[in-house]
Length: 318
Image (cartoon, rainbow, N blue to C red):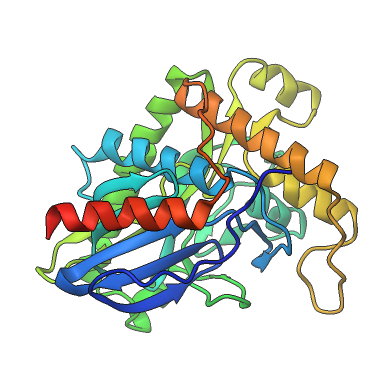
């Protein structure tokens, strides 16, 4: 098994603080610079799995970088550079405490809620008579509160976000506009690759100058769900499961092994063979989404590689 990046403990020049999320570690430096390291940790049902997935951090970082560049003409983003395969460097922002989830199809969490009889999700109606993976008449925005590690993200409506003062009405209007524009662009980019962008989430922050920008990842298999466009209609007509590109296959494996992140449930053991198969799936996702062959970074000493590359970049801009 190749080495994986599960945890970091860097001390970069001008470093002020470190935040460790479920899969990313963010170093705040002087001059409002952030260094975001994408680890190989795998999170599902808001639980971090004990073993890492080889190359997962590199895959997510590189897809997010490509998608940031492909959308920067319609929505400003935080990114300045990617000095290492697992690292993005950008402008420090104050993150909004909501994730903007947008759904074009009734899949995943929305479908699970629908099956329980719910017809309203985060204040958005879901029409009667829908089947799992049917397309919504129009994409719906179903926000979630941002959870700390170990906690669960929670559905929340626009009305509740505004009434609780989590986001101002003026800022929320911008988040909505950006979310719809990004999803439209993502849908177009996916279609060129023979894919359907089913649902995704975006995170935004505000710079010290008050500009709202896209942060974190975008259109990756961890934040998004893709279907293969070919055969979609036929599979729906027959009531068959859709062929998809996302980490939903990990969630389904966990569910089949009796785990959904609920209290009292035991996390199933992932064998080396299964972990290798997950890594292979992530590489397939990368190549399908980008249309490029994945080039594996040198993982013989990941920490040393990252530390050197980031330090070289920071020295070049100081």
